[in-house]
Length: 153
Image (cartoon, rainbow, N blue to C red; front, side):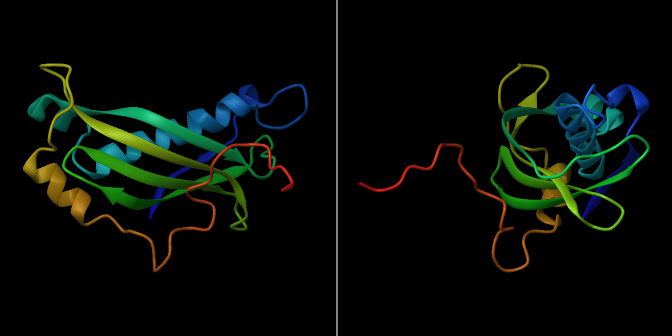
């Protein structure tokens, strides 16, 4: 499901001539805001339900360089969810569909009244249930762990 389309802004480009690593996180953050809008947690929904999302964990993988003015599209797959959490996988693609980066995130529903985790409001939960999941297996790049591979001894 496409969430966002944007372009690499000149101020996002670093001394290496490509998008700075922090800006990949910015683009994925904007994509999560678009996801929030899609599930009814836009500004009005957050106010009406006194509810929002917090990011618990993010795994960001850089695959290819992005350059100034390049078009970026972010697509998402809902890997899993429960009454309070979303596990999402985001892919940043160039205009040819090449994967530039991925972000796997665990998001927690939060009551803005109490500041504590809470169950998604019914209307939000209904929209979450209709989000597209993986077609068959999880995306190949999802579920990665970080570490230095070592040869067996």
